[in-house]
Length: 406
Image (cartoon, rainbow, N blue to C red; front, side, top):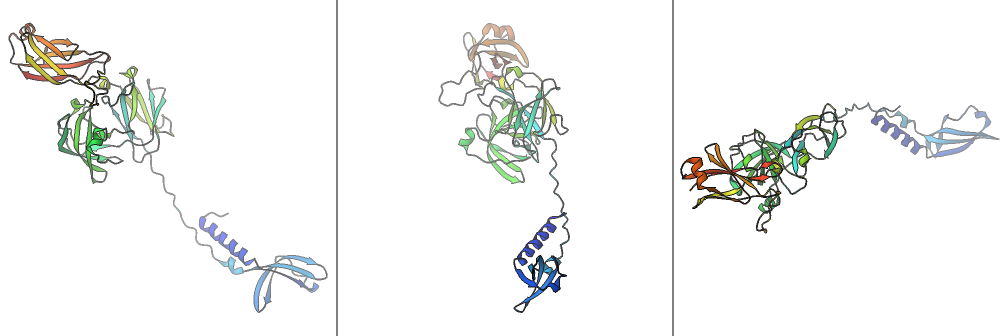
């Protein structure tokens, strides 16, 4: 039995050398007086002054003893076998539980049905394909999808102050340490076309959608990001001031998986098990999570450019609406409505108290003089009001508040 590679190699070498020596054969006859010879015996022949050893392979007795033999070289078999080499097997990398972030984001595209929740899965080392199992009752699970590559995720190393929304933020920089993967810089045109979209989570859980044009590698797996576009996709309300260091960071690329879609998933608990695809959802390495899809992706965005002008009949309130679906084109005269119908609710505020709520079906409303006198007792020098677009599915959208002089 050959138990090591080195022994097998040496045995093969001896066998090949013996075959090489045995290519020479000899045939000769012996007198009957040499009957003691038998097959397997080794004899020495001297031919042309050269002495060689031959092994008898065949004997045929007639009038003479006919011998057939092949050459041998005993030194071939005298080669010592090397000492067995001790080989240690490399241990496979330990594959532990993966990590995951549940992302509650505003609408990022016009997909139907809308995505209510997303999941970013990452691990180092990556165990291969990762299965996401879901259950409505926490008892019976079905596989909802596979993630074939890790999401690019990490955490921030610097505080990030609030920045301007709707234009480039040149003032701030932030370092991000990744758990794996890499980031790259892009041209402004590529960023405006949707490159380098990422999400940052505030301590209380809200996610701000951020884009960046510059990503400079400053240490191992550490990048300094700059030239931001903040509060993208209507997430300016999730912008912290400042966002503290240690905030989760996720690059929103194709490796982030849609988890819940459609109105039927809204507000319903989803029990998750996340584990390597070759393992069962009950495996000890499975990560258990629970997510309840919220209304963030369905809420209308906050209006902008709030204005208030006193007229003869009262205070004329105006604003410009935004849309959460299909609003990126520069060619259309107005953005799509994105809702079943256009409707707004306007709160008139006295400090933190709501003194009156108006409704409107266009981006304008009149706060009548009589209502102002009833609410405040006299004409006001300034007015604080709050405007929210309404959704037939989830009610009030994100509100915009302004205090304006009259």
